[in-house]
Amino acid sequence: MDNAFVEESVAVLARTPATLDALLRGLQEPWTSATEGPGTWSPYAVIGHLIHGEQTDWIPRLGIILEHGASRPFEPFDREAQFREDTNRPLAELLDEFTRLRSENLARLRSWNLQPSHLELQGRHPALGLVTARQLIATWTAHDLSHIVQIGRVLAKRYRLEVGPWTEYLSVMK
Amino acid sequence: MDNAFVEESVAVLARTPATLDALLRGLQEPWTSATEGPGTWSPYAVIGHLIHGEQTDWIPRLGIILEHGASRPFEPFDREAQFREDTNRPLAELLDEFTRLRSENLARLRSWNLQPSHLELQGRHPALGLVTARQLIATWTAHDLSHIVQIGRVLAKRYRLEVGPWTEYLSVMK
Image (cartoon, rainbow over all chains, first blue to last red; front, side):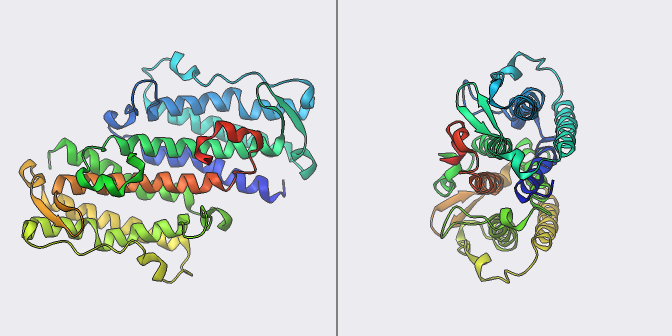
């Protein structure tokens, strides 16, 4: 896997569990259950969503591309699956599970020893149509980062009123 | 310091160095020096900015409130100071420095043993006017989170073109 693109993606993907662990483990429940309003996700819900992604989205879809190419469309991904799970599981347990699943999935990715030609292989997304293995790995990476952004924003907004006049300097509150 | 507000703020403030360390230490330079375009900040620049905040902004201003109240305005904070620093310092060294300064500043905060009445004390911001100690602590906290958001966004945008059709699902790219 001597591919700068894959190595750089894996560098981020491998860091996400520890990043979220450092930010969220042991944090008070008013933070971890905070949302941006009805129908929006708490940090707790985001970790559940990331777990489902490890189980059913990224690596399973990459496996389909490598085995079947575009002849077999991906299964649609259920973005809301985490809300049908046991919501009494402690966040620490979810963080442990995400860490374990991510580690297993990166081991699987490494075992495929992807070459540049593999990255151009195509798969068929149920809504977006043709996508490449490279785009999938990039999206897996950017998706992690987008949820780090989301969690930071949700937490910050909990203090929207607390910051008083400083709100003017904090674009994250808007 | 048996104050839920201060404890909850400190819980976030104490986690920021480890969060940024987990995300950025050892990450390839194309990630850590990425920006959103001319005049915008890289993750490297953000860590420099957070260091300056520890040195000259949050705890020094809180000290002014506790000692002088609103009679002595805060020094203006230089948001761009990090660009006049030695930009050859390794990021790992900056992360170490931020971790150390934050730890010292939280020790100082704890040593003040703030009571609810202290939180209502006022200071004078050079541009925003009267602010309270409570608002300052809330802003210190939200400011950390806003820069976690910024770093996640800067990193994600590096893959804006790489994600191909998935960009439609990633609001962070907009």
